[in-house]
Image (tube, rainbow, N blue to C red; front, side, top):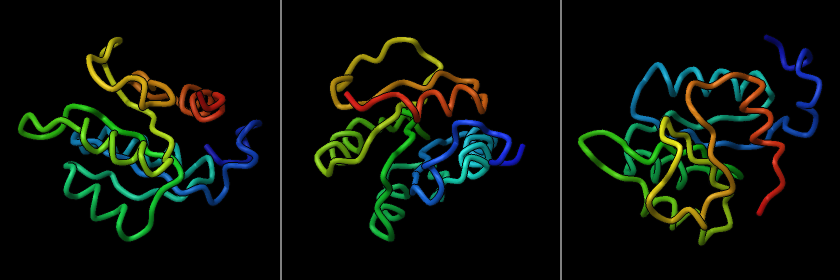
Length: 127
């Protein structure tokens, strides 16, 4: 699906996004959708340390973060750090409710992803 076929994708071209997702095919699917919408994407990062390395190279404007990562690692500290830097956080989750730090996130993007859901989430006004 080309970015031109996305009617509301205007204004997203060149926006830098970070994808933090430990399931490779899920992260790649989100990366593909975001790139198709015109965003520049770093990741998917499968761990907090990998995400921190990508952030150090070039900070994102928006981060799509799966809270539960490899080997039981949780991304709440990463969410906190990104929030403190003013980076918009979109939690990607198969769960409807998050137990911690929900005040730090802009929105929740439920899995599985579709281009329409991703675009609608990006278009939500910041809290």
